Amino acid sequence: GAGVSQSPSNKVTEKGKDVELRCDPISGHTALYWYRQSLGQGLEFLIYFQGNSAPDKSGLPSDRFSAERTGGSVSTLTIQRTQQEDSAVYLCASSLYRDRNYEQYFGPGTRLTVT
Amino acid sequence: GNSVTQMEGPVTLSEEAFLTINCTYTATGYPSLFWYVQYPGEGLQLLLKATKADDKGSNKGFEATYRKETTSFHLEKGSVQVSDSAVYFCALIDTSGSRLTFGEGTQLTVNP
Image (cartoon, rainbow over all chains, first blue to last red; front, side):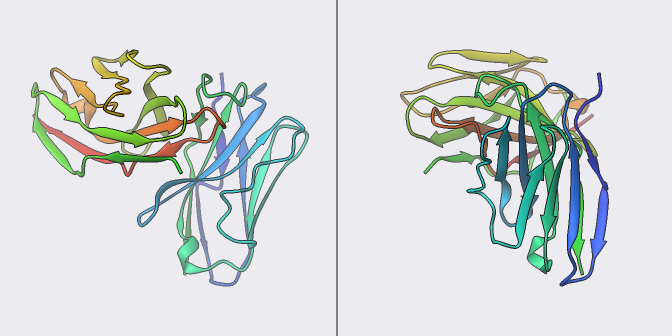
């Protein structure tokens, strides 16, 4: 079956612009996660969604970052007024349930470059 | 808070050499432990996992044993291949949540 897909695969934007990154999880997966992979910080958790529960936003680095998940499926990560330190690969993952015994399947990522 | 520490890379080996990548962790309770692999140009893939002390995870010739007494989860393979060249990440999920906490990653290059 289809895996996790993300779009765009690459995004170059000017400092100060807003960007939207999209994630399509595996069908039927109730849990969805966003992570960020950057040279200075490694792989870090940003936010996760589980069903209709309130999302855990504790990993978002600033209030310029927000995310939503519509209809329990597709998710969009929005970064407002982008800064150069936002340059990173943004990874989305999904799992059947929000439980450590269920594998998280990762998408290929969106490489964001802020100039 | 939770943390994962991996041996610094990069690691360069010849084909058929023995591989060890060290990983130690700090976490509350009894976390689940994972090794993820990222091949060039591809996304993260789960390589193996262990969910309780003394469990051994294994896959594709790789093994790692959950050692609670030393808070370690070292990755080993007896004979590496060129196709094993990738970045390897040790990670954990603690008992209070489901977010993954990753180590810094170790770049492995295997030469023919």
